[in-house]
Image 1: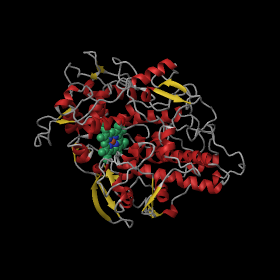
Image 2: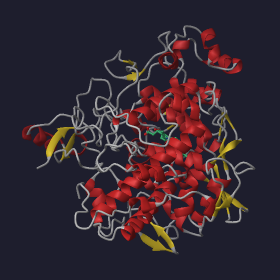
Image 3: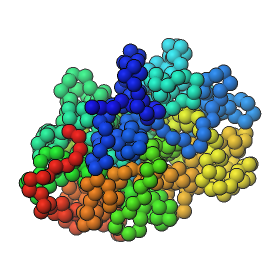
Image 4: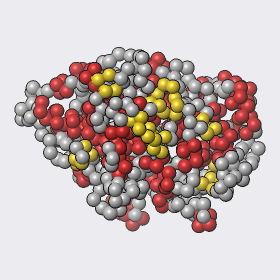
Length: 620
Ligand code: HEM
């Protein structure tokens, strides 16, 4: 018998309350229906029962927490962006973006494009699409007269002397307010907006396995030998595809480009980086299910499926925590702050008092990586010869392009041969003037980043810096430690007081953390979340005493995971790659045969004791 919970409060509701949500048509967003928890069960697909005391925390629609309390302008009873300290409005978001970030293309000397691809996939594990779909599909009209009458419309004004649009006549970029428990009808208006999304707030590959059992059963599981459904086209393995006339791949150039993934979540069809990693981890699941089934012929579909998923999630988390983040944030910094360990054995930091939740600040600050996004996707052949460029912004919601003309082969080769954009004060013009390609006439992703910062009601940059570094910043001079003199000068020119500086603007101009490549306050807010993932997740892969925990030998195998190995195993036509796939090839990181890249040995999963009782405890 399922139990129904209020998704916001996390407590059970009565039949009467449930019926009211049906009447209001708000059940999907406002109610979680879950089976009672079983403490010995593995990680649930819907994220429920991760915390046994609060069964729906960790499930879809878990509310966010805030690192610092909200700060809005509530003068007229609404929750609008805070005012500047002199009582006037803050400078326009587009004006600040064009002032602080120049446009251009500077290749990063260190990192490859795989780095930005995987970062987009990392955040897609804990986010959902509706806030973007809202303004490109449901409310494309915010800059038109109709937009003035829709309170969800909050478009961005483009100044008349804008460096680009003084010539075009475009005076407005479309944007909508973030969806909230209030806008979905779960809680009353008139309270601080509480952001709502539909992914599980944990590192669990929910962007590919989905957030609901129904969707996984319909579009994911083959219910045979632990496999995910798949299709073979031109000798390549793909996730299943849509069979309907209308789908989310709005930019597929039909009839040539047909493929659109019908995976448990639609997110796999969005940004190119998310799409690629969804395909790779999809294939990786089946690669492991096949190997496990050979090793353990007695295992049933259920045991094979959930073991392959568990290894896939662990491989994923290992690559992010021990390969990607140390490069970006500094390995010693992360060890010092207990985000990672210096030894390969188990670790158990689980604390059931910490709920599996995302800090509202986390998805906002990680938008900073938009400055590292290179607009030109460079295609290479298998021998490393450069072929041509393609604008990456034209590939959002366009899975079909990957499946024609061997494009996926050339993109895969390019992903580890091409540099990403440099982490500097320069943004690729495709990101800052085009954004989602033909989905919109013109837009600036970074202007939206700053504007959304305000609609989430974040306190000023200095409040976060104070939280991170334990000292106060009362005037611009106090900020000398955080900014180079010319950046500080820019801030002084654009903001009247240090209290006015927006969090996002501070990140754009701030000095980078010692030993790493990202701004200091971004490091601080990201590590808060990264530790939260470890501490609040009962099923964290490094724990020795979680249900179905790895043995010590199995964990040592997981430690061998790397992005280069992933590409060797499941990338299209990858037979050579540099050992560190996120780092550009060079004398210390030479392209070599895949044979030389360490492999996970799945024989550690050979189960000698399993003859009849081979069941894995998880729901079907
Ligand atoms: C081709 C590359 C990319 C494009 C075209 C793109 C575009 C966008 C757009 C249009 C939004 C929605 C803005 C809004 O809320 O109004 C967004 C949000 C976001 N992007 Fe990107 N992006 C790209 C790459 C990346 C990368 C590499 C990262 C790395 C972390 C990233 C992280 C994020 C995050 C965290 C959000 C916030 C999503 C949310 O809170 O719902 N993006 N991006």
